Length: 256
Length: 259
Image 1 (cartoon, rainbow over the protein chains, first blue to last red):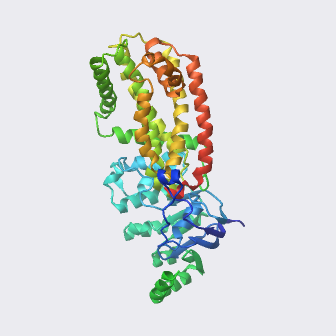
Image 2: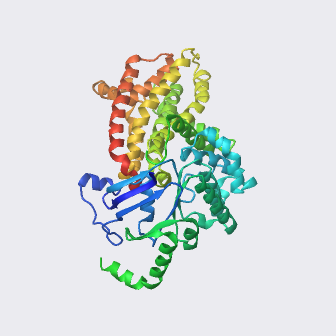
Image 3: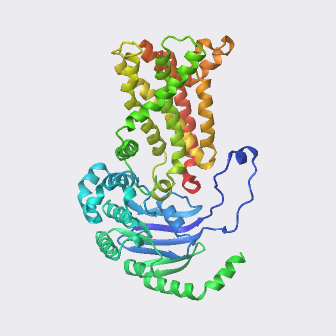
């Protein structure tokens, strides 16, 4: 059986492509690179596979390469070496409000966002009722989006991607802003999504959430996979390391 | 584009929604939104009319029609390219997080401005017919769509090239802010080409913007189009299209990292 998501020996470095000014372009000079936060590799030899219908968690400290990994999977950023493959239609919920337009109403944004995700107009019309109902926004769905709270935006975004008909969902830490009841509802919807054969890839700092939702996962540290396996174990060991090794890790980074 | 599968029909629908979104957002809640959009161009034309007709005493027949017939397509061109150029950087979340087809965004910017132009056409025609005294011609029914398509084909490659280049060289959008006013006066827009000194005539006629704008004016003022000028603009559109496509092919894959 082919995997829904495959990632083999993926390497990625930033630094090579930076926006420049006209002066740099004409004179060919470049200001010295800012190396304070730079490291050689944003991702180093990252590899994993997610079979169809499974749920996969990616955890790690800030700056460990989680978002870079998702961006490469989505195809918005290109890896330097290695291979990624996605077998199916993808929908992503990576940044709160990305793709939404503040002056448009919630329902107008449903159409725009659905289209961004690759849905056909007919499909959006057909599922609009379910999307509106799932979001529980009721009358607010006709109000301009700029009047929404972060939680309301997250509700709308999640309601659309879960109805988008995608086979693979990439979700980056956006459910955290929803209230507890809506989070529970989302988890329920994600279980149904997987029961239908959907594949889930989640980035989160909420260990309770990833343990609950994900079967397996990896932990990234400075771009490398430092732990992999059943999610509960990976999450528990990550929490131990975060609690114990923080001072030592800070020192090793300063020495790089 | 990796990740999301898009058929041509889905892309067309997406383009339609992007364009409609912008129009709705711009005119929403403002009854006068449409009037403001028109007033800007008419006011600018009025200023040039005062300066060149009244003060300098430029002798052009129906100068107010000459001005207005050129300025509306010019606004479409310059605004379309300017907003497309900002588009990749302004829509960074869309590009970074959602994997949206890059080439669609500048096309949406140009088509939004094209839609504004089409909405302004009734006012433009009213100006040509009422104070101008020109007879509306039946041939406009095919001439106007033809010029619309030609200008779209000419503007889109410029917009695409500028948008992708601006992701890497951020100053480009400011350069355009300087460049378009310069181009405006380097193109016979507020003066007729006949007053340009004879030795320079040839250079002014090489400017494809002149051929395009002159086509709009002769459409409204003479009901005729010069096939040679149309072919010249079309040739430029093809050449620019080739350049923009190469630029896009080379630069687009990394846009997600630099915006």
